Amino acid sequence: MSIAFVSEKNPRFPEYSPERDVNNGLVCVTQTLSPVLLQNAYRKGLFPWFTQDGLFYWFSIHPRAVLQPENLHIHRSLTKVLRNKSYRVTVNQAFDDVIAACASVPRVGQGGTWITPEFQAAYSALNKLGNVHSFECWLPDDSGKWCLAGGFYGVQIGSVFYGESMFARQNDASKIAFACAVPFLADYGVQLIDCQQDSEHMKRFGSQVLPFGVFREKLSVLNDVGLRREIGQGIIVER
Picture 1 (cartoon, helix red, strand yellow):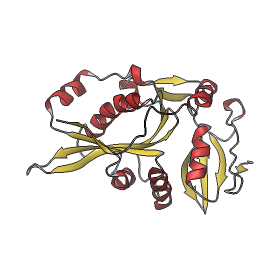
Picture 2 (cartoon, rainbow, N blue to C red):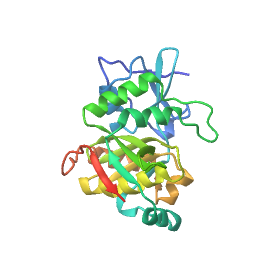
Picture 3 (tube, rainbow, N blue to C red):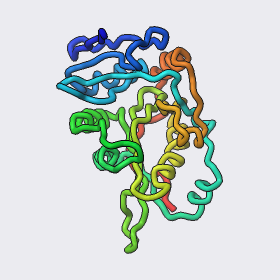
């Protein structure tokens, strides 16, 4: 099995082609994980999935699940939660806490995490550069103090938001964060949200699947379309 190697000095990633995929989506490996490598890879629809024996493994998926913000669907039960529950949704106010929780909060069917300390450091560095954003859902505890209950993070390049991972410590917390974040991103100019895998969770929000070639064509345009304004940090919604 021959796998391409990409170096930090020449961070040019190969094109992924489903027709020539003989490695189950594995495209290449690197020895480092840096903001430059992350940005170059995401522009081509690639993402790092895990590290092993000092190497980082980069993958792609075909077909690709995406959400166009205008197609966001909020199902009836979540609409009721959004209307009746007390919550606060913020952006970029607790990035390090969000990615750490994504790495540590247990998920059904998963026995471990790919979000190692090296991953956390690389995405945190890109967050400080303004190209990774976290969305946080805060719920009040019994004393009324706001506590981080769920959220997610992703990479933003041009008008594309590449969703990465989410977590929930309480029911509906990550769903609340996502439901509030999508219109927020659309207002800033995001035109496409990459959901990566075609999950039932994302289908309920209105995601669709695209052949990778179509997805890549969209990236070639939208990665270079700037936002209307920079995404900073603050409160999006508070009820």
